[in-house]
Image 1: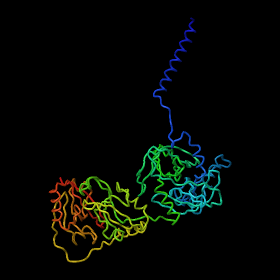
Image 2: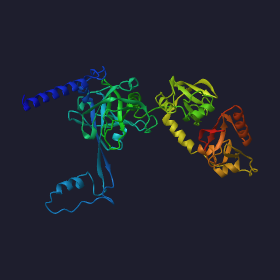
Image 3: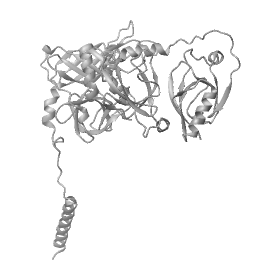
Image 4: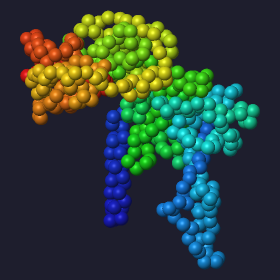
Length: 504
């Protein structure tokens, strides 16, 4: 056997062995990829039927001051310079006016048609905010002028209207976002970086995300690619229903890293209905100030677990100013919906109709009870709340009070609340309780952010009026074996909050 023959044989043996190893590696484990019914191998048919309902939103806004001090001047170029056209486009054709320095600023976003007969388009509020002109661009190249029906800054939703006679429209409908589970397939369609009709696919990565963008945060998180320009576009389920409005991303670079957020349809659809009907939102309002129920607060209230929303105060003139709900109550269920944490309550209340009578399950002094309340309107309540914040702080005039008695407890020095201490700390006339005149550094009270001038109104849900009351209540709690004292504090203007302080 020649050397070449040997080499060819060795080569065949090596290739056969490598192939065997490759087959073995591929075959272990022996799993055939499969796709669930809601996660098909191809989404072409689904996308084809939805592309016509998704639109690009382009807006323009006139901004003044671009020709003022600090603006970059038009450079003086030699005659026939090859850069003349470039600088003309940049400096002269910006929609500006040399008389007032105005400049035309344009932006792009996405949206979708939900009513073909009426020409109703949904998008994000931040896409069209402050726009002078709004245009809706369809996938077939047709462009229609849009008018603004209504906006809601709290949920970042806006509703537009185009002339349905100007173009044959295709509409999509809202689905039920509450049925979506982590791992379900979703599809996003939008206008990222101006590239209209872009389809991306991913899954629901998480639900109920709070990204601190508004009072009703309850976002769907998805890894479907969402970029700048996708804002206002739809997030579809496998049935082609809109279960979210793509709104925000987390991205150090400005591009998608697989962390996008969509407003759930459960929240958005109600807002859209109100904007279409009234041109504004009409949300339910309970008229309470709330704060989280921490483990310490739950223990102080005799609750087995920390849940619900703690009522820190009741707004004067609000729906429950009649004593139905009181400061210190913990709301654990509203109209049949569980309140797991504080942020759940504002959302479920806002989604309820104005004037509706609802059952509210509360924990009051360790005992569960149900009360019935009739909801007011949030927009009216915000006016009341703003007026209450500016409450009168003028003090009643009278004879100078005698020297106050004081006591030291839990790292605080407390004293009687009278004309002298009201004047010293500028405490409103309608605030009652025991004033905190000093807080020791590195004390438990200091750790909780308690400041001189705050007023203790209750301890463990019992009113206190004198320093002796404070000492007695703390002593009683220690005798009961309590580790923490629950204090209701009033600010100088009367705004309430609850604080727990260790008593060891």
